[in-house]
Image (cartoon, rainbow, N blue to C red; front, top):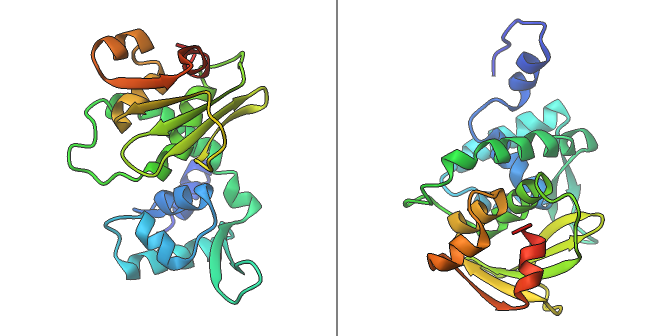
Length: 208
């Protein structure tokens, strides 16, 4: 991206992360470090040469680094400590997007892994006193595990550990519940979701 020629923190930040697809690359790396192939899979619609260009620019700027994965010789991409500081701005944008998400996917691509950022971003802004809970989330992709503890909210792929309850919903309704756009009672009355297990745990997790 060309320089804006402005001595302004926002302008200089946009010179690094303002190009199309760049923040979505960062989103994927906030979920987890990834190989090039996995990044391409997690970014439906991106051209491979464009992904390579964005990674090259982010690496040159000090946002992304390449490293060997595990003990093998496979290269993966990861955020640098400075790059990882983009979590806060990205979570703020996720919360800001709430009015844009009420329409649902409407043919857009969706991957359950994107909820590992979105749900904690939405819940953390609403839930102040947290009652520990472990909730399974089934949204039409690989099952997820929502963990609520005194230290925060986390969503990760479900690893088979015991759950207090399982919540089934489509992505838009799950996000609406997490954002507080509607109550759990309203959602159940409208048939927007289903709960197996301890409903009180779900209410505690979603402050519903």
